[in-house]
Length: 192
Image (cartoon, rainbow, N blue to C red; front, side):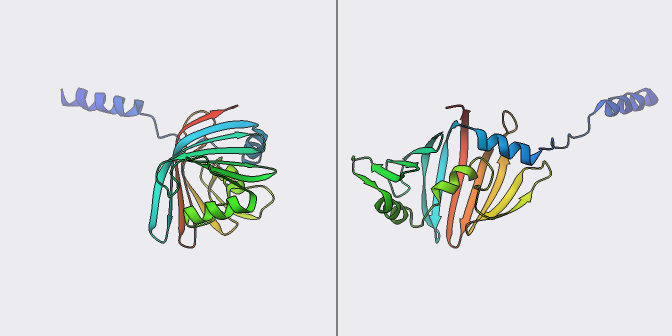
């Protein structure tokens, strides 16, 4: 009887599968695919802290071509805020309808957040890659995708990619000096 139980245990153990190694990504091809995306939408939570002081908010980011539209709601020192960054510059509108543009918008945003966030580069960072045309030092994970990179004085770490779909980042942290930006994505939509 013991022998039969031992054989049964060995047979069941033989059926167990070894953990799967991550599927390798052809990074140059993947990067070209990401750069070719004409539209996407990302929703989630963002937290910004500077020297230990900070807050978080909900974020809804829509990217259409070269135009980034971000709706931020919650404390984050900004209340409700809509930011639009396009080739003509940055414009901000707060919850009460006050609108500022260009250099004034950059200053207002930096003042409210306590640091200047590189929105033009962040557009690429949220997709899991350095912004093109700006030198970056990348460290790749075992799956061939960037695990972290340093760019424009910021250290960007991607803690988790989605397991399905296009495998876009779900958790990202960017740090520079005493400033930290954390992004937790709840949903990605491509082709928006």
